[in-house]
Amino acid sequence: MKPTLKIDFIDFWVHFNKTDNYFYNLLSQEYNLEFSPDPDFIIYSGYGEKHLNYSCYRIFYNAENLRVNWNACDYAFSSDYVDDDRHYRLPNYILYDKPEKLMNSKHDPESILRVKTGFCNMVVSNPHSKKRIAFYHKLNKIKKVDSGGRHLNNIGGPIDNKREFIRKYKFTLAFENSAHPGYTTEKLFEPMLENSIPIYWGNPEVGRDFNTNSFLNYADFNSDEALIEKIIELDRNDNQYLAMLSQPWYLNNQMPATVNEHNVLRQFRRIFDTASNNRPVAQTPQRYLYRINLLWQKSEFYLNRVLKYRENFR
Image: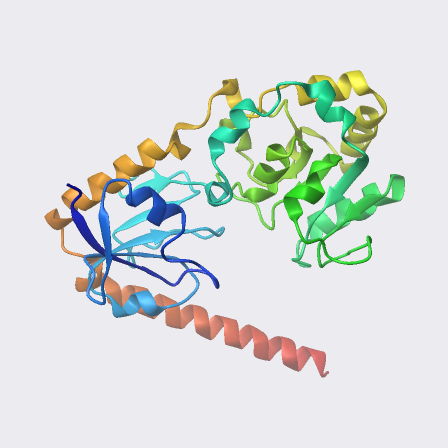
């Protein structure tokens, strides 16, 4: 009989489904999950401050490029490489599909290439990544890049299904919104699922999980021009393109242990079994340091807005 676990999910993104998500589906394998106004554990993310209302054990899930604040949580799952028993590295891309799907997606590279009717695509809504936008314009001048997102759209309107759109292209511009060691998102993962070679910029340590011979890694080139030259070379030479497409996505063709569901579940099991050995951080003086830090961040944010407003009216 499964043990009962009183939990809640707090401060996740809009449209987050509490009973159909990565964590609920995983934990349900071993626990009867009971949503409670007085939970023993909350799993919270960074899209609000309601977690401050809970004095139980807090487990932070960080889907963004942010660092863990140990004054706020007892345990954390994030994309960072952190040497701490309270932390488990769980990259953002696990939310989008099963990582094991990349293990068997290239049975027949020549058949994959035959259905690639487009050169290169980009799907972007965030207009603030200067590096991505600058590279898009450079490559687009050489050969048209079909942009299907809300930003820089050049195909008549935003697409309905990103994965279906990506599938027909030989290449996908896969630039993260920001870069940090370990921070790998669906920007890389989804093109791989559709066997569209990613042109990747972001995680400087992406080679710890993925085979950098299977995609075009911005960090491996001395300049934008050198990378663009390689893209065009692969586009024109089917043999070279197939050689790259034939490479396994994962390093040594092994799925990273950190995204193996058995290992993630083991970490949760350890948390639930041993948490009572320590007092929740929400019941210690550390919680005040966290609140002070939040107030400081808000003050900085509003000060910067005021300064920008004044600058615009000079």
